[in-house]
Length: 577
Image 1 (cartoon, one colour):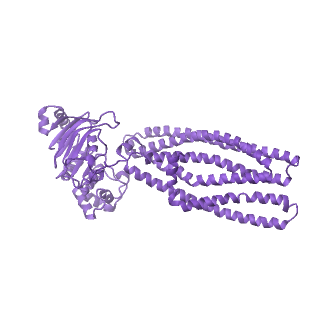
Image 2: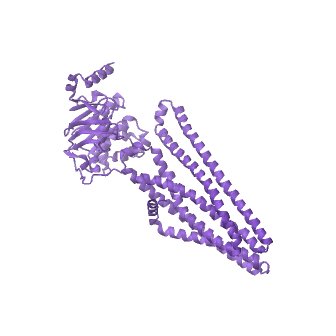
Image 3: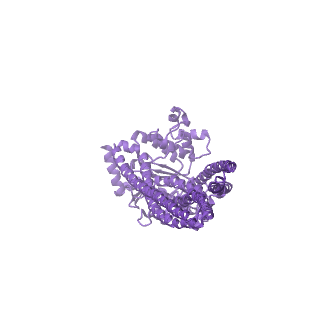
């Protein structure tokens, strides 16, 4: 692990230092206890049994049981408290990642799928947690065990110990080669899991669209493509894993055969006695298994480091930040000015080009034009969701970069076509507009949005759970809840982005009444395709290909016989037809 990554990784151990030190001490004691059995075996074979000292045989047996009882307690401590430490570190990382995600700009989520972000928060953090707990523990136990075992085996027979030691590089070399192949296979597997998560999240979120278009077969087909990729990736991973473990087992067996043959020759040449030879054969695995554990640790280390690097990628992503001298906006009156504003999502192709207009305080300003022209982008720039590529945006004469984002957004209410409601109660969803509002204020906001009577008809009234994304509500009911949320917020600036375009005519009329009430006394920016809903706006701008092509009142634009006039006449003919 690189130095800067290691420092950041160790940071998460700090709150759990006591458990960590106790865990490491327990691990060291476990390594020491591991040598007790071979020592006692050698003593019995060379002394107690030949001399028929059965009293010491029993006594050493009891002592060994005592050592194993202590070993049991230490293992319990390492397994339980070590995992608790790992889970706590994982929870802290998850909190830090979630908090970081809350600070990231819209652009980050435009470029990163939800399923892949969730994979980082679950799979990757699990790998990090396993490394945090088992990594130092395995490293200490295995390293200490190898050293202690080699020292002990050297006291039995230095030459046989050296023969054993010479075999280790071959074991490490073969295992490392197989491990690299297994690591690459599992990395491909992890990538396929992230893709499946992203696909699954998309399919589940759009299940109602799928069913409405009878496209379940198509979704199954798309899912199965990813699923088959996953099976193929896991198949390769398990093949590599099988080669790794079978290869290690074979090398270990060869290792034991070499020791058996060389030790047998030493016994034949009287360079070792039968008791030491037997003890050495019994004890050799005490040397081999820690070596294999160290090799296995490298795989765990690789997974954990890869997961931590992906975690750090998010933690180091550029967050939203206020300008150095940004001030609190206070309560804005709502005058908005765009001055030569250009914007490009990818930094290259302009979505908006040299856009300028002014919305006076309390005015109703409409943006119309074909889809993809840049209307929604204008709406997103006002709350500073994105930074303009060029030009300036002023509210009440203050450039928005000079205002803190929190205070700016506090003054802006947004009602969109795609309403997002949380899997919570009706009351909680309205309260999202202002969390400290009273029950009376929530009810008043619902009444203004013409949704109170419906809420009271629900089994639990305002405490009724509405399901994920408000699945138990109709489109009009969800829209009215979102309007109630904005009524509760009571902002001086209102943005209505296609707020009624997805509704039927009867529902639209009902919603429009609520919106007219909401717009009263506020500076309002309306994006609409139905020109009949904006003809009473104070000013209308026609946006085409990122530019304002026409600008004026409804009457002025009709008299110009330009784009707006053509659009209005076309819609009028369609509606009459």
